[in-house]
Image: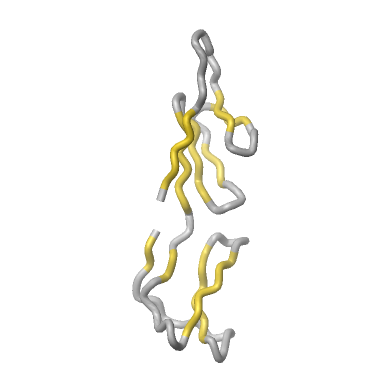
Length: 94
């Protein structure tokens, strides 16, 4: 999913950058990855940020559990009784 953040501009403003929610400045048409696993793009009128996290949904929920690996921005699915063994995943949602 994606979120939209208006790039506030004022009459006569010729700003060529966006300010993200943390106050960081980014040039128009630049892209960056956030700490919470989103890919953002700065446009003239807005910043668009979309998640990079695919969530596993097609797996045996009785036998397996999903674990989020923030450093990789992804989930792994492992057996509850043997967390070193991965489980098959049939479906993901973004």
